Image 1 (cartoon, rainbow, N blue to C red):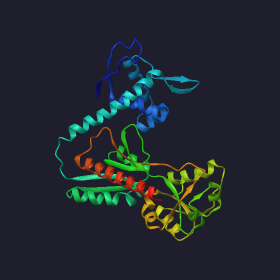
Image 2 (cartoon, rainbow, N blue to C red):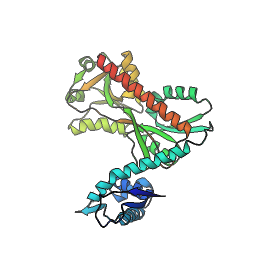
Image 3 (cartoon, rainbow, N blue to C red):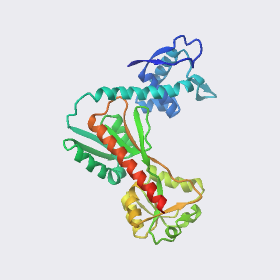
Image 4 (cartoon, rainbow, N blue to C red):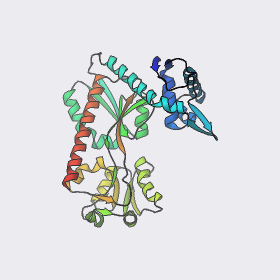
Length: 328
């Protein structure tokens, strides 16, 4: 696919044209190399060969008359021209996505089916209310909702198995990523637990307390374990379970504390069944809840309607959380 892209006067004089015709896949590949830090990883992400990545970048450089990357002591670095190009390249891909969307919106909705992929915790704790509102507004649309890890959600969207994906911290050069809200991992305990009564503790105190972890090897498990590893500490693990829900039930029965996604414990925190505990000498375990969709395939009207509901629900929850925090 070709497009005419105005680069202005940011490049050297040997780039003789103010407007240069480049291919979209060259721009995507350029950004992939930046995102993944090298040609090999960019090739894996784009599912093409490394020579194809090199050829696309070389063609882009030849078309612009500049070098976009340089190798310094064996490591890849971006050139001044590459730095100048980057924001324009990112904006160009956003404009292409909007253009496809504008054309696609002219097509009438058939009221058919909509495939959605989401992390299991998102399916369990965030989407039910959204789906209730969506079904009420779109009764003729059959929604096929599939769950998986964040990596699996990304793959389903890239492979065309899902039109929209909802999971945590998802980025890829071939998808648009929209952050819906924060979804940090927080330490929770039974309200009668000594740490819960204090509300604020230090990490070295938590290290000695009975802890419950879930889904060994997952991003959540790695994030919470990394908190102790960076401090040179070894958590007192008394129980490992497979799911968030199992960990939550164990905490409710006073078997220990656990690091759980905020989205999974919001109801219990409101009802007073669980209490949040702040670790005062460590940074919060922050993560984003993101929605993704492919740049190359315009969203149907049914998918756009769901996207709007996701944003509305996330904004409402965020406003409610901030209001509750001010009251405490």
